[in-house]
Image (cartoon, rainbow, N blue to C red; front, side, top):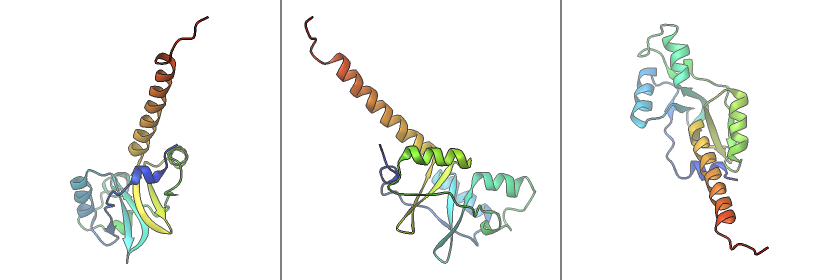
Length: 146
């Protein structure tokens, strides 16, 4: 079973400071094709800012994105996982928490962030490998005479 370390790998994690404006954070998310950003305050993880936060806490309530700081609209109730946790366990955790992004921690420090699609891709790869092995076992072995 794959662990988060195999999914996170050596990817760079894009983060923002809590004082950045929502519009600047949204531009950064667009440039990197990501849906969420870990939020830091003096290098310490304090929250996560996602597309959902933009919609529900900025757009839906007509807050000006240029004048709103990420720290004022981020989610601070973090759902986290360790690098050695299994992808399956993390998928279940995300489903229970109704979140699409998971902060990954290693030795108390931010190690990365993964999206639901990352875990689903890892799960599909794992299942495809199992199917391939089963097909090889079933169809590529010598037939036993009766």
